[in-house]
Length: 282
Image 1 (cartoon, one colour):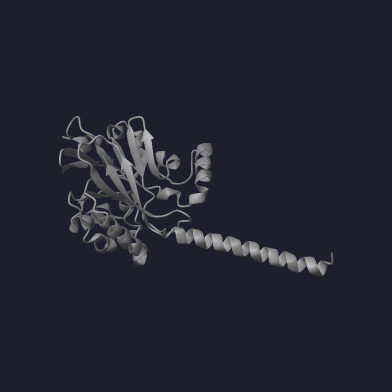
Image 2: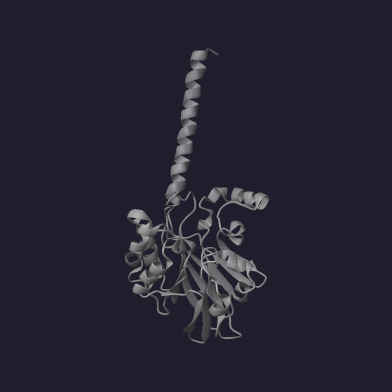
């Protein structure tokens, strides 16, 4: 075959391949910006069912990047009419994001309250100020503390601990005066609470931090790297590297790791939806 014919065909083939790759890349980013609401049933042994919305990893950054997605998540969470809402940390990426906390979460409410724990990014910026900003809009921040959620015959202690990576966890303070012989709901930004004997006192742990691995189709590769090397993404967690997102059954109870809300500041999500999670507890 004459060279003059094969060369144009190769060029066309390369263009087709590049176009397909570019289309897949763009499609993955588009999917990574579509917020999804996931409903999950979890039997924890309570007499009166509770509906709990959980959201985490907002990462509102400089110039308010990510704030639009965060506000959308806040509205979608309230539209589900949960009994309570739990925020799981990493509200900002860098100090410029802190000034957006009030406007991001203003108006958020639920019949049994809105509660929050702190993440590593709050500690890396200004945890005290972040806490003040959350409390200024009526959100109770649980730092090694607990409340009891009451509905009908249910008395469900909600325990919130400081961040396991960057904070100072005080399990004794967190569990002090927690009612005995009832299921416990534990909120921890970092899913490594599931590796602690104190964390395993809970019937259900809710956490974030992992962003679901950020890249959906490559999650098996991330898990493989983690198994082979003991290192990888996400940093600062061991449990989270093999449990990137979703509901997990453990011998002692349940763990839900949310993939978070952030569309991605340093790198966008790719075929990995941001999510609002509604847990139907029974």
